Length: 221
Image 1 (cartoon, rainbow, N blue to C red):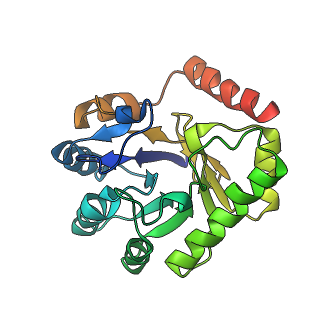
Image 2: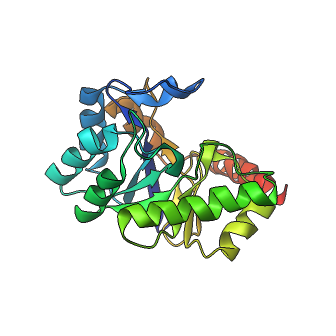
Image 3: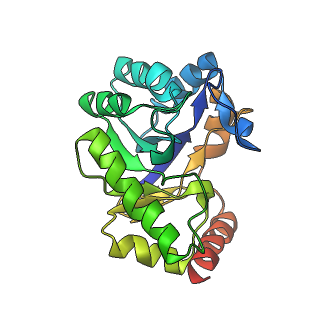
């Protein structure tokens, strides 16, 4: 893939300031671990960095490290957690924007978007985006899929609502111009060397095909 792009996603850094959801601790990493991994991926070509869930650690640890390394990231905020303990406040979202970061939506309540009723869809895809846009002071046109789940109907809804780019958790490389962007989420057992050995190499064609077919199956549901 000539324009092969690697999307790397962080979640929580350091000690959580709130009660974690079941399984969420798998994606919380130490501060030193975060710095080492960030230093590693900063040396890669064609990398896009993002942060999910709107944790307070985005501002406390994520932003200073990015600024120090002259890096850019997109922060996918949960509107329903704004101002809650351990999460970003509206002023924090504005601070990320002022620092040159991009603000996206992760929905309202960190629930899967696939299979939502119309009222839930309005809350998660429209009202959450409006609340986050009010906090950042700019329109929001990018979204990250909670828990990485999607199907054809959901993607169609997101396109119809004018989202210009949507991020999943499909753990494969992307193409820079793709509307649906798969990402590699950093996990608690990752290190700079493990990221280098598992994310950087181009997989064998058979492995690429298997992962791509999984994505196609999701879109056709």
